[in-house]
Each structure stands twice: as C-alpha cells, then as structure tokens.
Length: 229
Image (cartoon, rainbow, N blue to C red):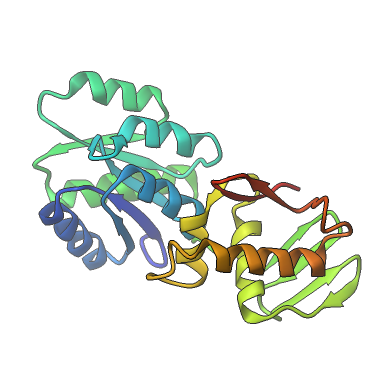
C-alpha cells in the first residue's frame, strides 16, 4: 500500500521532522517535509500528496486550520500529531476533517499502521497518475507532452508546460506565487514574481480565447493564480 504513496509531513520541530522522514521512507513512502502552516498548504496544493501528517501547533498558524483548508478541496487522509494534554485541539482537528491522530511520543509502527489503514479506507491512488488533463476545450497530455486548444496543437515552452500542468492539477485552488515558483522553477526562485507574471502572460496568449479576459488562468491580485474552469 505504501509503494508510490506521497505523504506531506508538517512539523516545526526539526528533530521530529527528520525522524518522520526516516520512519516513512523506511516504510516505502515518499516524503514531502515542511515546517509551517503556509508551507503545508502550498505543498498540498502543488505536490498532490496522497496523505498528510500535521502537527497541531505550528509557528505561523494552527494545524486545525490547515486541516480545515485542505478539506475544502481534498479527501486525502489526514493524521494529526498531538502532545499529551491537547485533547481540545485533537477534538477540533477531528471535527475539521482529520481522519486520525497519533499522540507524541509515538511508536513508528503505530504511525505507519495508522497511515496505511487510512489510505486503505480512502482507496487513494498514487499521486500524479492522471495522464490526460482536460477542461472546456483545453487538453494537456502529460505522456505525449502536448497541449491542444479546441483540437489544435499549441506549442509551449517547457516552463509554460510545467506551469500549465501545475495549475490544471490544482484546478479550482488558489496557488500562491511562492508555491508556483517553487514547484515550476525550484528553490531560490520563490520571490521572483515578475518572472512568474511574464510566463503567465505568455501562456495566456497561447491558450486563452481572450487573453485580456482570461477564462482558464484567473489572477487573485497580490496572492497568486487559479485554474478556474
């Protein structure tokens, strides 16, 4: 059940985050590790994990609110990590849509067993196994690396293709500038919003019927973009 599964892990304690990486990788999972609430939301939106493990207390937010935000668009299993005595927060997390909880300090065997059971209950498929993305006349073929608009092929640069893929896979969700820059360009580019704006404008000219009034890629001013169709 763990083969090919991608798990988002969010904990601001570096020692625990490292331990979780080792435990889950040894169990066959691919791990996306982050330390804050906003990082967790960005990673959930662009990395498409199959499950999430969230600490309840984070430096820039509340694990309960992260859980609630993810639940607005995803049914992925969510397991929360709670310290002894955090009963009220644990209940809030479950009410916000968490599937299960594990109390710190936790047993590696218990954690992986609970994660595996949660994945089995949801029947989640490995992330990223949708080879053809389509919406209202726009088609993106991941295997053939080809884009069609109303049946006509459109030639995109590799960056434009990855940008469109990321937006389409996150359909309906607001993807922040930082999330898009990190996913498409990589670390070190997360604040280069001008580069992102230029590429979005070029992409719109190629795929939008009316680039000045975009139908597919909608701007959320000052925050990011969403694939709205």
